[in-house]
Image (cartoon, rainbow, N blue to C red; front, side, top):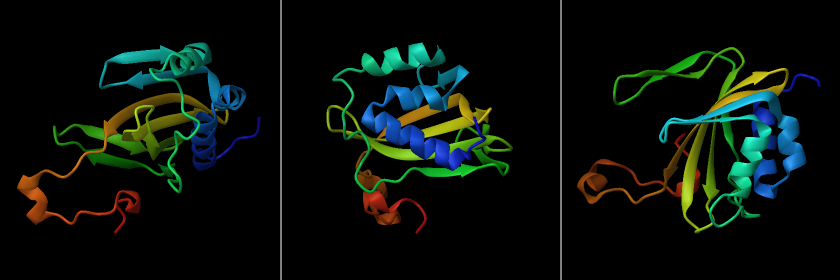
Length: 157
């Protein structure tokens, strides 16, 4: 398999998830695939477990999981770090590592933001750490301090 860039792989991954295309997903995931969910302390290993997780998703997978016009955003291959509010330094990207973000619609019609930190090996997704957060309205206590942007505008304004 030819080496593919992280942006193309992540965009294909999101599209395959939206279509429920398990053949494409298996092609994109490395045979030693591992995924971490830090918020719940879980680790998932291999395509079979990944597929079973999707098939058991409460409410089932939606054909329109991706939002119309919501292109995944991918950063990668140059070293980038962030400092979390808890003062933990987290790598966003480095050689062979990428960060992808996308907005998705869950089976209950709620909209969530997904951030995936992923590493490639042999042109496939080898390791992924995924964070999920639902959209919510800005709290009243800070509305006079912020600009409230349209949800699909991203954060580049």
